[in-house]
Image (cartoon, rainbow, N blue to C red):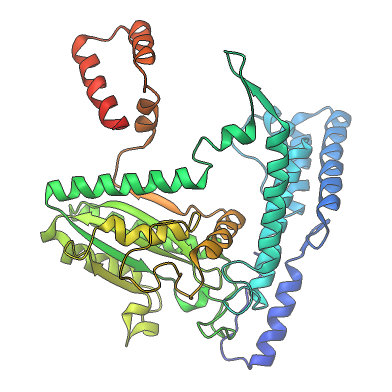
Amino acid sequence: MPGKWQGGGMTSHAAFIDRQALADSLLSCGPWKCSNDDQALIDHATAQARAVELETARLNDPIYALQRARRRATQHQLTPPAGYSCTGELLRLACPLWWRRQLRRLTSRRREQRQRLLGRTQKRAGIYVSNEGYRRRIDQATRNARLLEAITATNQEGDQYTLAELTELGLANPEFRRAELMLRIADTEREADRAGHCGMFYTLTTPSRFHPVRQNASLNQKYAGADPREAQAYLQSQWAKARAKLKREGLGIYGIRVAEPHHDGTPHWHLLIWMKPEDEPRITGILRRYALEDSPEEVAHNTSIRFKAVKIDRRKGSAAGYVAKYVAKNINGKQHTRQGVPGDNLDHYGQPLETSAPRIEAWAACWGIRQFQFVGLPSVTVWHEVRRLKDEQRVADWEAATRPEPEAAAILDAIRKAAIA
């Protein structure tokens, strides 16, 4: 983001004027104005791609043409594509779709950050994401749905399906995604119980300078202008330090990390982690150390503002049940409400989960924040691939193609049956 706002020590009126100036500056990205509508964006993307194409042909010097094309992208405050050959990068910079995707992402984030700076992303206005940002996400989803309905795929049997129908069969379907996450968490918990490991639930929050709005919905004078991606980068940095320390100490952990927004769109993390019971005090101490490393004076009298640790009590329920609400809240809001738990269908701010979930999804999509990440566990890709071998004919086809040794075939059969159980 261009510039940073330093509000400390300023009067509320002066601070608001300073915020307004920074908010307005976010809309200018060189030749492109983020206040323009989507049709203007499409036209601008087409014009930029065409200009690159014509200039490349005129110069007849690919290296110099690439330098010019990169400069054009950076003038728009876009990052040129990387990791490609000279020709590959030029082709992308001469592609209207590349410009369209990049400008839409830039525009969405700049406009949303402007709303955050002006205090319009908060529990008394647009919770998690501004109302403007939420409408923009709905419009995007509508465009995508029309495209998926318009494209038909044909398989080797001659069956035809729209991409919308096929999308509903995979993890793009939020209900399937939620079910798979809960299955993986429950299976991990069963393995943890078998190994005699204990579960801990940690919450990590950023320092106050990352929050544009306070809990009472007033503007935060300590806010330094960071956007949610920068706040997420801070959490990732502190987590990396903690993981490195745990590795040096020989302390093993595994589980899941959930990133979700505060009411003002600033991310915080929940961690459901399993470990050896005897290692828990040291692991908790290390996580606390790095969670409170930055600006410790803010939490001198109450460290729970930035770091909370709760031991999972198996007598009161499972870890999977404990985290189910957080998973549902961040996907589609659907869950089995726990009996005897008042407000289990509401989020932290008293909003129904089914209305909070779409706004959280819009927040994650806008800022490109990964909501769920498993830690210290094998890749799920192998499990996905093995589950494709559900019928015996596919297994027979695989064996005919690979001709495995009997022992290897027996191992695969055991893995397959476990995966589809």
